[in-house]
Image (tube, rainbow, N blue to C red; front, side):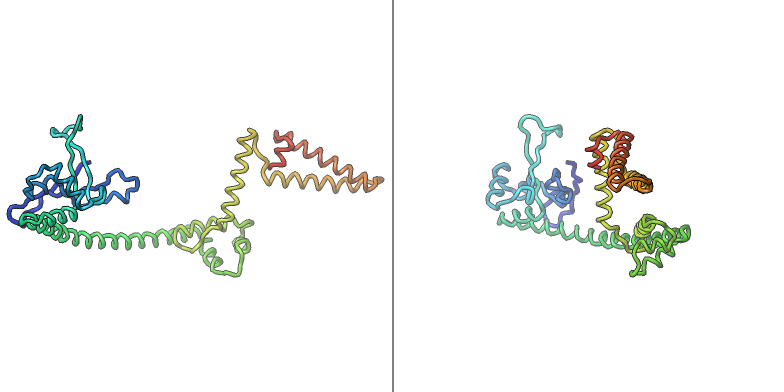
Length: 299
């Protein structure tokens, strides 16, 4: 992980420690957990405190004594002395959060430790002075962007209303709560409610109306399409649509009515003839669609 290393001016005599921006858990699955913050290399802190202990012993003791938590208080990073990819037994750096570094400096209980802690406090103060104006500037920019977006939305709405004369009527009828969607669609001159819902969806996306499509209707449509696709994949033939079934049933009813008009036939003969006619027409429909009787019943 590449870190942008910056050197902060020294507010305390004899103290100069590099700080850098980084994250303790760059490989976190949730990007929100990859928080960038000011970090300190524990080797630099160890040198600034003037500890006589070996770094490996010193950092291990500090982690145990102060119960430091990896990826919360510190992170381990392997590196090679020549800057190449670590091979064999590489060295290990420990990146500390600024709060952890202050805590370890104070726990050192020495004049140098207090100076180092004061140094980190000054680092935070100067960083805060630098960040506050940036936050104010970003807020002003966000406000300006929001105002520009509002103006753009108004322009888009005006253009939509100008190019869609029926939109004004839709707005007027949509406000009448006593009417159903089907009744409003008829007032618009549409045979079904599909055009009404489509235009409402467009206008809702532009912020012109408050409208949420019926989830039950959408779910039903999705389920029907999924069922038809499943039949097609299972049998390799196009499934019979509801419109096709309705047309077939209408043809059967017409044939029944015609059969009733024949003279010289008893009611039993008419009923038997109708049943035979129905079976014959269903068999012809299945043959035309390439489906078996069980597949047609599934549809």
